[in-house]
Length: 240
Length: 262
Image (cartoon, rainbow over the protein chains, first blue to last red):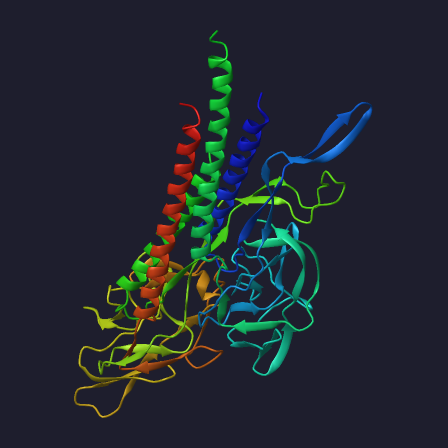
């Protein structure tokens, strides 16, 4: 039928996907260590438009075939540091992720809300051990721990281990964790007794929600206009 | 339908739970020995619409994919065991633990409970009991004619009877501490129970092995700070509100989609 109907529909679907991404950001506005996703729109398909003169075909330009949510890139901006006073809460200022050993392998997270398990190991909320440079971190019972800005953990002046901080090209897994290829961060900055708040800015999300909604509406108008034109073609032209 | 509707709904229910927890903290702002609770959230599964690294039409690899998250869920509620302020009451049977640890209490079913609320009383049989009437373990019997009771920082309980000059030792309080107090189960009446997550209780005399000391005539306040809770309450309320906006918008989008066909 009319190309425009498909193009407008593509646009609407892309905007629906974008709304899903925004809704997830908003739902995680209070999730420690969460990083917002931003939908990126791209042209669905570029078709070249040709002109034919005799035997010669000449390209005169291209025609875009609608837009789609081409990717959602994760915004790595720093979230605010909230002081909790809990000595087992950690926040990373600047680049880097904590390393957590899960049954599926290493996972990386910015949510430093840790605790000790029954064996005295430093673990995340799911009981997966947090890795230090020498493996699992075990804290002697009943001793207060201090963590230096570079991640060195000491108990009563004695160094136990250093929290492993890595960075890399990561993608989101569930439960606040990331996966991907990593390499160690040279000089991380860790704050003890603090958590990194979600970097979702509610104002920004509200604005992109409105913007997205209006774009969705506009695509719908385009679709309807095409439909009206088609209606004219079908019904009015036929009235002979 | 739109995923956003469900995603926003998970956000609203998570914030409801957050508000429930804050409300309980505020309700216990004057409960001695109470430790505030926090909710920790985490994102749910992601739907991968297109994986990162997929080849594009131009033959290149796309650096990012499309992953659409499906919302949020509460990961854990955990107790924050920071010390509360110490309040002097002058009542000889009020005790606070300065440092880590819990008083051990014998529950009616024979198991042990743990508490930081040291507002003890004497029951009809002369036993040292909690405000709810559960006996302190090991049992400490206070003679009916005791006119003065002293509790040392090491947990030693002694009493002087009427007409006597000497103090008589009545027993020693045992204090238990846990590797992971955040893993204790709350059972109400200011009591906690040990769980596999909290680890086995390490019992000992006050002042040994990182166990706190006993301070007589004082009570530990709740560690709830009203200002902090109010700020959290406002944040939770706004987060709830903005999630409802996101449902509204998703609904409006569906209405627009519906209007395509008249």
